[in-house]
Amino acid sequence: MDSCNSCEFGYYLGIVTFYEDDKKSIKFLRDHGVLPKCVKCPFCNKKCVYNESLNIWRCRNIFLLPKSKKRRFCNFSISDFKGTLLETRSTSLPPWKIIQFCNHYLSQQWDHKTIKDCLGITPCTILELQSLCSEVMQEWITKQEPIGGYGVEIEVNKIVVPLNQGLSQIKLLSGVERISQQNFVVVLNEEEHQENCLPLIQRYVKPGSVIYSEILDESGYLSSLGYVHITVNYSENNATELGSIKKLQRAIKIHIKRVESTGKDMNHHIARFKFISSIKNKKELLHQFFTEVGKCYPPFSNKRNRNFYQGNTDSDKQLTICKETNSDEEFIEFSQRGDDEELAGTDSD
Image 1 (cartoon, rainbow, N blue to C red):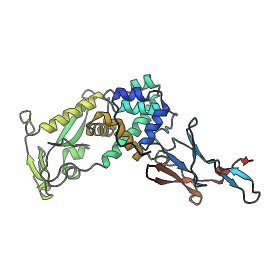
Image 2 (cartoon, rainbow, N blue to C red):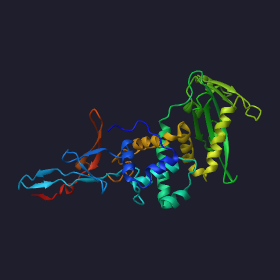
Image 3 (cartoon, one colour):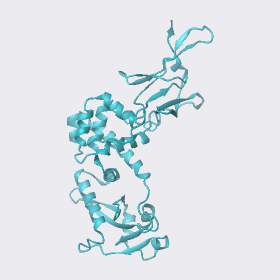
Image 4 (cartoon, one colour):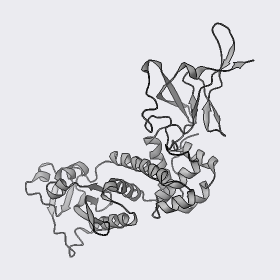
């Protein structure tokens, strides 16, 4: 079966479809590359059999012992959830709860209390899952192309967002294309806010762009790199020249106010805002997010627990995941430690 190219679930449809239904949830996760579709044994090179009740892949190949010629089963097995978003350190959650968590996390109604009361997930696990979701979104941001291009008009400006009822604040640099509304948002440190943030504009905006901003470029830094820089007065009466950036900054402030955030986790909230706002069709949020989850946490990868595969490199084996398609089979290899004890089998009559 091919991977899912597109599917639509609104917030409430996502709840109805996957609530307490592990079978549908697992199929959804497989179709989006979060869980493997088939696995090959690293010892026998044979396809493993999936045990649905235990959620494990197990090799049942029979081999002959060299001396006694007795037949034995290869007892290699591995959890279906190993190395994926479903493998939490604090507790084991069923697949449907993971999807429900992410469905709520991607919504405007996101809060910890609903997750705790409706799904029975502990605060410790909520923070762990939230951190993992944030990592997926932040990795997605690193893959995004700079905005703009030759002749494309972009509004860029700084913004100060008050936190904790005005007791603290966070500084941001944001930019948005006037026509497509593609944008970038960056958290500034004190030095970047007070002195020079022009190199950040170079990083997130393509050369040749026409930049409207109140940020001064007295040295001609941007002009020397191929940008057209137009200084404008950022005032309430100047809604025409900086209307797009005001709209973006207003949306950022509303997003931050909805979540009780501090400066320490601001990168997490900005990544969430950027990912959600980039999806125009909100019914595709689940599809797009879990597609990125499959890329960030490939099945059986050691990204979730880097110590899991540490060991003697001389005994390393290859665990092969096969992705079935209509035309052929594709194989992805991951390193895994293989000990002789794993081959200890049972006699077969």
